[in-house]
Length: 93
Image (cartoon, rainbow, N blue to C red):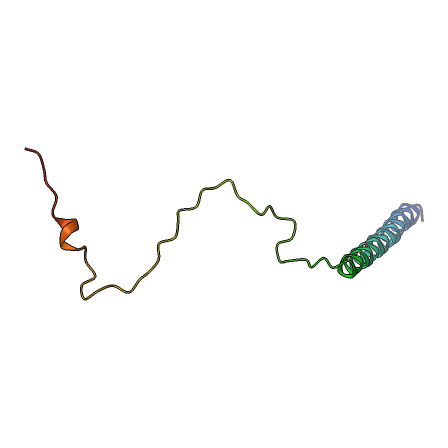
């Protein structure tokens, strides 16, 4: 009979822990729902003021990385290779 008492105590503690974990998860879910509602309400207010959110909102518009200028892709002539003027170079001997 004394062996049953420690098992009951352990089961009681485990049951309490499960109950606490369940309440914790319920509170987390409720907070996430409230946060989503608050964000939606804020977005609605911004929309009423005329602000249109774009994809990637909050990102900086300019980058510190230099971009190479894009070359226009004009249709090539009969030959796709370099022109004869470009291939002839003078070398000093």
